Length: 594
Image (cartoon, rainbow, N blue to C red):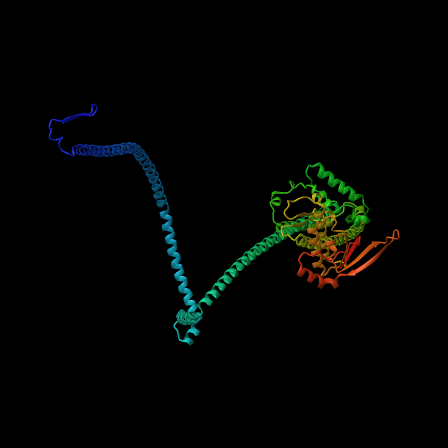
């Protein structure tokens, strides 16, 4: 049977097929089954192809990963080769260095071996000496404590000490056992107690721990403070020691200057010519000094110390005198100790005395020489007497001058040191800041009263500036600090301060007012003239001056006792912090009396 779809002709070779009643439907069913099988086969084939394609993609990705891994392997192999080379080079260098160090250490060991043997031998000898001395010490000790050992029934004192030590150790052991037993009992008791009130004890323990921690922190802070105080005291002690050393050196220098001055003065008075160096300034200075000294009459020698030039200037003039020591022998120039110098001086003085005695024993060459000598002796005696009187007067005047000078310097230094020691603390109290600094420095440390005193202050949070460059308020605080420091040395009955707060702001006014209130409770009375309420509202009493409106150039005075309002002010401050204080707006000038 054949069927042409385009022509719609069906050719049947077996006529029996057409005679069946279900022929068309059977044919369609068969065609449909064939189409479904083909579609299912194609779908299966499609799925297989898709899976194969996915497998190919996975293979391609793996191939790229394999190529990357191969490249990495090649790079790693190259790095391994370089690292092996570097390792061999490093091993060679390190081995060479180690060999050289080993050789050096062996040489050092060989070099130090004899020394070590020597040290060991000396140690053995010392140990032997120690044993010998210990045995001798034991013999001496046994001899000293023979009676004591015989009384207590022991062979020697060491046996007694060992017995006492053993007894003490047993005693301590028993005490430790008792303490452990007591501790165990306490722990058991505490455990039994803790069963009932563990929660409360936990709170108590926590509170105790907090308290211990705070106490430890406080102790740590106190330790730090004490350490800082110790360091400060040590620094102050070192400073005092250095100042004492400087003072001792200055006193020694001053003593040497005084001795040199006395020697030069003696040479001038006794007309002894000193050999000088070839220096014009020194020679002319000494010549002028001798000429001025010789021009004075013999009776005015006592007025030498009262010349209108200071001791410092005289010392400076004498420092220009340079004595030529080249005429001395090498033995004399080699002397450098003061006792040796004194011994040589006594020897030379003895020789001079012998020469003078020898000259006195020499006979006169002619008859008139005795008369001339007698007259010369009389004149010498008169001159010597006058010289001695002048010398005594000069010495007395100099001693009085030095005494007055020392007393003056001591009084000034006593006041200056007190003021300089208190001004920094007062300035800190006025500024209410510990970083503030104030200090005094004399321009002439030797005689400070002859020149000025430098006063400098460093305000809190600012750099150092000269006093002239400070602001008006800073200068006012500095002046008040100096005033109160001087007052602490020599207190005045009362102060009158005229508008000291004119250049101050409200903050500094409050600081100054609080400081004045604190000091007034101790040993200070003040009358303060002020126009600012921040100052006079802290007074004990007010005196106000105000003009009369109906009259010209007339004024009246009123007074007010503020102490009666202290309770009211305290209650007001307790209920409303920052409330305004008592105001007196009608006053044009207020005097705060304390």
